[in-house]
Length: 256
Image (cartoon, rainbow, N blue to C red; front, side, top):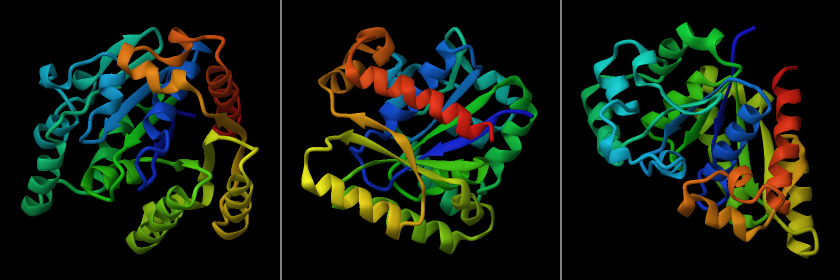
């Protein structure tokens, strides 16, 4: 069957996008799945979250797209079952360079991952909160999108704008919207606005929500500073258990 490829995206920052990409990857790997996480953000947050200094990585996503070569040569083994293609902090400059020079295209990354699709069960892209070249490459490479979203107006607007950009882009990027789903993060059912935004997302965005809700948790904020996933830092915390449940739900959905 080959790897299921997902792009974790939202045009609103601070909604738990990187935390979701990293902890979903880690939970799936812990369950015995073979995972490749690709950091497609100029902030290199997923790379740093896993304790890797992006400044020391000569082989990274920018070099892969610019220099080409075997994608296997750019993959780092991080934990058992979890591998990473790191980002680099000046990806934003590279974004401009590629856009002006015409040296890379939206379809390039999909072509590059095709030889390794049978080596992994899941490939997860952590996208930047923009619609630049690297994000578009990740969206084109993916089979569907995962939108981590707070049940708040600005976060909701982030995915509405994302949908508009995707529909404008057309082709594979637009088509992938059909299988995409929303994951509610930093969730608190007791807040009235949360319930209202949850209703609007279901009725207005025409995109299904995963059943799992990721509650707010201080451990989620602390984990990156320790370069540890939630499973490693706080295995019994509520937010950790939420991500574990979500990994089970995600795996079932991705395999359909």
